[in-house]
Length: 164
Image 1: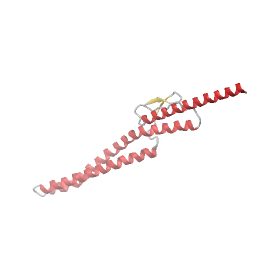
Image 2: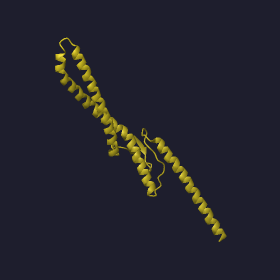
Image 3: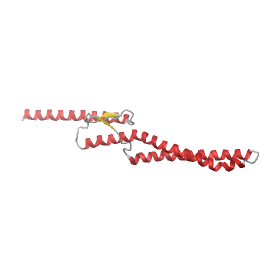
Image 4: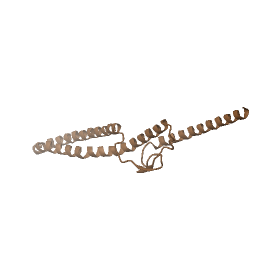
């Protein structure tokens, strides 16, 4: 996704871990919840297999013998596929939040340095677009107030020149 930056140049965000600390914290939370869900699934499956084994004619000896290997294989495949997928999806989701946060930081740094910041813009698909709209609306009001103050100061200066 490419948009124009404050200089009017096209830019594309290549780095997916823009704010690694917060992104990895969120991704870790996603993965932790997913791991808990997988463990719960594992426990429920174990319980049902045990119930089935008990009801079988020979006491489920063959199923009981196969159960540990089967459950570990299921658990390994589940964790091996789901957690990396969760990590990748987590990066893509947090990318759409961390990128705008970074853009806001850079925008406000330009303002703090006294530069003309222009209008805040985000890429298509990014989150926090409503916040961006509010920042732009606030900047418009501030610019109008600044222009009015400058016009008033010029008027007073001109009046002083005429009177003096």
